[in-house]
Image (tube, rainbow over all chains, first blue to last red; front, top):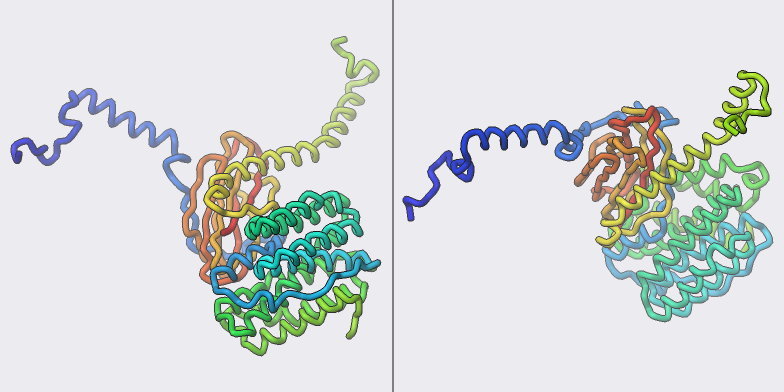
Length: 289
Length: 154
């Protein structure tokens, strides 16, 4: 057996005549030279200076969909989601800005109902999405979603329902952008973010976990919403509810600007109270300052 | 028949103006079309990750860049999730790259790949916060190369 072992320095090549070996080696070298994109990855710098990017070379942040946050919450534990559910049916407002905010709010509520695995509430919220979408002329974009929400809630396909609520949010925003209603589209996102943040802070205040608190570290997002309101048309910007939300964002901004591990329980409660107050205004149509 | 298009126009200057105006009118549509094409390729690149359970966002970024030009795309990412950023172009022969940096400018790619007009980078954020996907056209036969970027999470 020992005699049959391949001597060091010899292998499969030892059976090749020398000219074949030469051709084979040349072919390998040529292949490497002519196909660098396939064989070599680019080597990015380990550190860059973000200040080297002028404002025009920086794309705005995209608002995360609620399920990005809920996906993390799923991994952190199992809080009392039923306790977070809001009661009652919302009434469609006259004010388009409030309708857009409420639509986002209701979609976010849909995620809470999914977490609570409350099929009836999920279906009710799916219908509310349709009614509110109708009030701002984007009903068509969510008819199929609303039906799917009902069907999947009946099947208790919670992952599927979540995907439908995510899709509804994106479809509504897409339809609004097609109608050149960029501002209202942003208000839908903002309404969803406000309700999501209210629920998140409530869970975190209930002693959920330090990792949960870290989810509140969203400085660029809060600044982005503030900038969005700042760039809205005068009438919308001066809408009492929108102005009230901007005040809230400016109070939340410095808190979430801290690193996630530096946010204190008092600050979490403060964010909760602020978002709870403004969400009540969105639902009830009162602007109490 | 050969000169049908321009038979109504007298001078060469007039023809030149008409062609220029027509091209100018059409060019935004053309750019839009190619960015849309780039987006289709980006979704194609995302497909294997969708099959692995990643939810792919419908929102996307895109535009056109010159060779070696870079753009920073800001994103709010959450610790606990995994993200794949997928970039693509519809320009044959173009080479792109995408890499993820945190808000201090540190490279945080967990892995990345680059294959011609497709590129991808994965990140598992160690902290929740703002991150930047730096996109770049490394090589291209065109002066301006349309690109699109999508991301997925799980």
